Image (tube, rainbow, N blue to C red; front, side, top):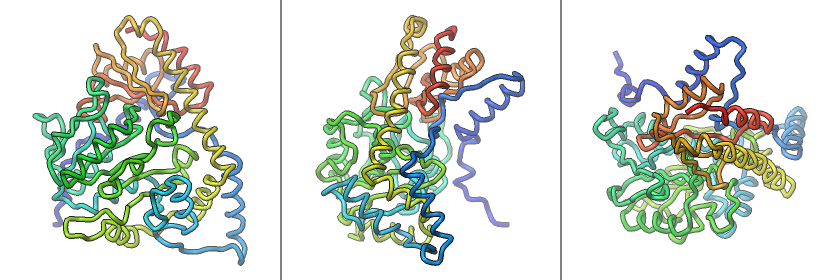
Length: 409
C-alpha cells in the first residue's frame, strides 16, 4: 500500500475557517430563525464595479465569435496585463517579464512552497494567515504540532504583538530562512513603515534569507508615507518575492486573479535565478489564469477601473470606522478591551484580556448573533484576540454594530 503524505498526517485536525462554519451551523440548528451577520469573513461582498464588469462581459460575448475567440494563453499571463501591472503598480521598480499572472495570491503562496522544498527553514509572523504554516507542513518543511513551542516544529514563530508594535524580533530567524511577511497584515491589520521594511530587507540580505511579501491588502493603504510594495525598499529586488491580488480591490475573490513578482536579480545559492524555477513551476503545474479574468484585470488598471477600485476600497474603509466606533463604547472600554486599527487595512484586531479567543467568539455569537474570527486560529500570539472584518454591506455592518454595543462582558 502507498503511504500517506506525512505532511497531511502532521496537519492539525481542523483548519480555522471550517471550524467557524461548523460552529455557525450548530448555532443555527438550535436557534431557528436566527439572523447571523458575519464580521469574520475576508470575502468581498459588493458587486464588481460597472466599468470592469462590462469589460469582462464584452469579452465573454466576443468569445462566441470567430474573430474574438481565444484558447490557451501564456501560462505566465497576458503580456498586456503583465506590462500594465509593472508600469502602473510598480513604476520604475519592476520589469514586465518579472510579473507572473495567476489565479490568486493564496494559490501562488501554495505553489511557492514547491520552489524551496522540504529542507528550508520557514519563519512566519505570529499571528499569520494559516496557509503560510499549513503549506509548509504539507510540503514537509515542518513537522508535527509541538505543544512546547505552541506551534509546529520546524517553523520559526515571530510574535507580532502590541508590545513590539506588531513588528517582529528578526534575531530569532536563522540564516538562509524563508520569511513570510504580510503588510497590511492579515489578521492584525498592522502596516509596516518604511523604516521597518528596510530593517527586514537589510536583515534578509545580511543573512541570506528570502522574503515572501504578501501585499494582498496594499490597496487599502491611504497613508502616503507607508510603502505599498516591498520594492520601494532599496535591496528588496535581491531578497524578496511579492505576491498580490485583484481579489480585494476589484472584488475578484470569486473571479480569481492575482500575480507574483520575481525579480531577475533574486538568485539561489548556486546563482540560478529564482524566476527561472518559478517559470518552470508556472508552466508545469499551472495552465494560466482565465482569459476572462485577465481581461477584467486589464480594465481594472484603466483610468476608470482605478477610480472604481478606489471607491470600492473606500466603501470597506468606511465600515472599518463604523466598527471601530462601536468597539469604543463604554461597556467595551470598562472591560479593558483593546482595539488595534490603522485605518489602512480592512481588519480590526481586538484583544479581550479576560477571554480565550474561542470563548469570546462563542459569547458574541450567542448574545449578538455575530460571527468573528478567533485570533488563536492565526497562531499562538493570537490568543485572547478576535479579528473583525469590514467586508460587508453598510446596512449589515450598522446592524451588527448596534448588536455589539449590547454585549454583556
